[in-house]
Image 1 (cartoon, rainbow, N blue to C red):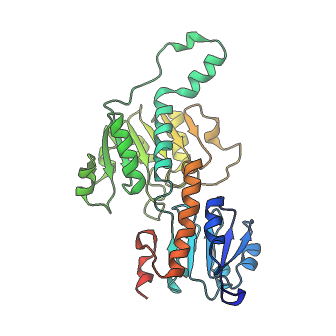
Image 2 (tube, helix red, strand yellow):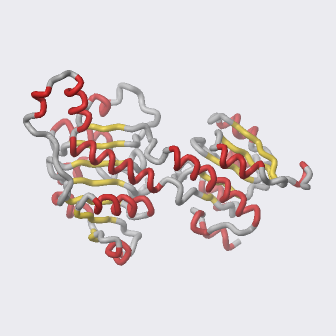
Image 3 (cartoon, helix red, strand yellow):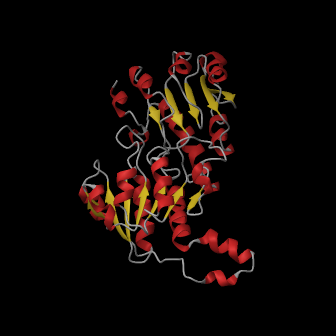
Length: 328
């Protein structure tokens, strides 16, 4: 049995699903340090001499990682990693792992839920039904998705799952991802698009599922909304900041587009006086597209599995963001 001195120390920042914690407790060569705080000072103190960190909503800075000279892995409880200092990890040849398979179905379903909610105007009809105002059935507001054009921005794991579900609703699906070969899109019955701006005027809906980078920040702004159909919808289940929120507000209030479904915002949590919150043609959810009963368990178990595989020397490259460090 391992002694305390030779155990691998794992810092669990914010609680994991019990299934994930059980995986850690089942190993007698691991010591668990739990930290239920997002404060950098508190995390830095807890991070002293740890070998691994599991991360949910915390920002992991160079200062935090400097407290762990023997750090072997940072494992994200999810797929986004913009809150982790990747440069520091690269400098130290430490892998950043993500739970690649854990929430793609959940996010895809939420994207479709938002799109369907917008198309069928479900919140409007729910509201008027509760007031016994059945005259609000007319004039007709809902539209069908059947035969409409959907553009998916970003054709990774989640984008593929959105396409699969959209095709099930008989949407015509187009995909834009400059980093994915056309053959992959065509194999999924998706029409490749090489310049998304050129086709915006033909799209009835846009679903955003790309990473937030310098390249994609404010990817949808004033010019893009002006090029869209006036009855088009936009859905963002990726990251806040890919859509210019001021430009979106103007587009929604001026009638340049019909509606928006947003699971993410630039500033989270957002204050109740956010201008978009006052608009009836916006559907909102609090960055929970990837958070379901099933995905929470999957995220926890894959987050821990990634840590254990690094410890055991059999890390899965598919789960590593910075794969170049695996060569060292």
